[in-house]
Length: 192
Image (cartoon, rainbow, N blue to C red; front, top):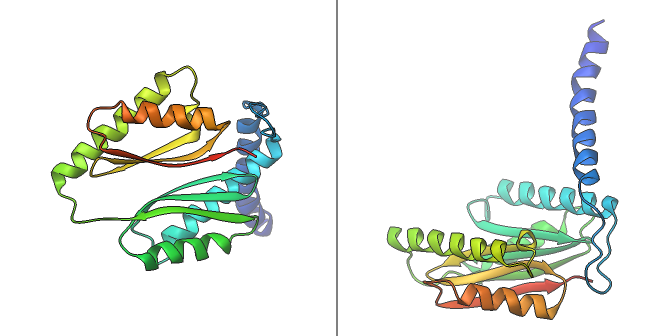
């Protein structure tokens, strides 16, 4: 009887996770916006699993675990963005991401931090990030859920996957219109 309990103890969480992923996928239809953009629910689930594995591996790595890296995955292509203290962290992030099963390519869009960031800068940056996200959410042409926003000293990095160059340019225009934004770095990739 103890053997069955022990087996059940490990099987039930695995089944629960599988069921949860299936239910989440059922709520989302296939992405059919833009040329060549269609993905299946299975591919989207695979991409979510890859993103989670990359995040977990980066958090476990002593060189990069303290970094705030944004990770987006589409059809096995991983897009890394954010700010790093040094080039070694950037290089290590790419190496760690490439070790994850299912990763076909890593697109490194990370930047080096410049200068010291004060507490005031951090607060200002969080306000700017919130403003950019809110502006993207309120824009009818944007799918803001596909765009990640990171801000450092007023410099906004936009990353993720968009349907077209027009949508990419729209995101940049929206971000530039937010108070406090000094520059915008476009790390958006067009869906293939």
